[in-house]
Length: 353
Image (cartoon, rainbow, N blue to C red; front, top):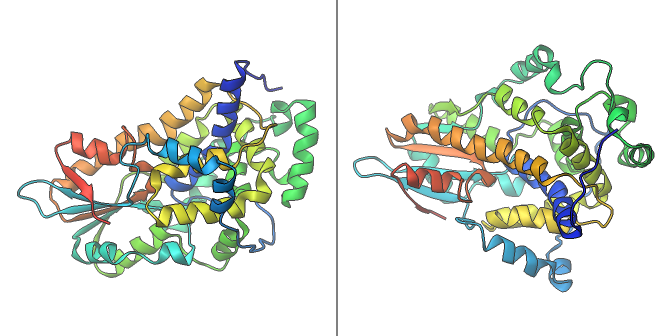
């Protein structure tokens, strides 16, 4: 049974928000990988922009206040320069196939046309067979330890609630009971419209851009392997994994609206507001809690550590200039985001959108 972590009421509420807020982090930082379990027949029910509702009840002001604290939180397209080199560009993506997201801005198209090299998070996403083999070769990254099931990490009350929530979500509990909770959560949180587009063969932005670059004869470079990404996810504390899954199940009905609003924020370049939006818009009084240490571990391994690894591996590419880098948008802002890390490496990084 999972043990809760006690703390002050304010601390508990803050961590509850962060659990559902992890959805946005996953959405904007992890390249598409192996397909998690989800409903058999995804139904496309477009969401409604939450901004008017959030403005009316005061939550939008809170979101904007939090976003204002994020360094480099405005803008999804950046110019990267150093004397003597052709300019390079940094493009923050969302790993979705929404046609509005796939419609790349003219400035990005121009940068793609001029680039000698295009860098994405991982080239593994271009080879579905490789992703399938990865699942077979490393089941421990997506499966619970032998002899364990999700039941072992839930209290009796949580088990009863999760049974009802899985049924409501159209996800058979038997299909996910031995999967790691992070992997199940990735499937549960995927909006029906996105799942339907994926089933029809639509590519998310990163893959579409990479395929266009390949067709144009560009050099393609990946910053990570899918194995490294899966290892980062599987390393999350089980307490946080379970609490995050329960939080997402509880707000399942609002996910289409949340994704619609996230898409609007992304297209407007309000990248620093994506995290606060996901946290504050999905608040529920009964969300499970996870310790501050567990969530700090999540941020460190899924965002900060990967940002540093990306910046390090970008060095030889940027040293030649003429590069277009396309990675999840939430890798860009923040004190440890790529914009700031590249500045520390001696580059001038300025908005290009």
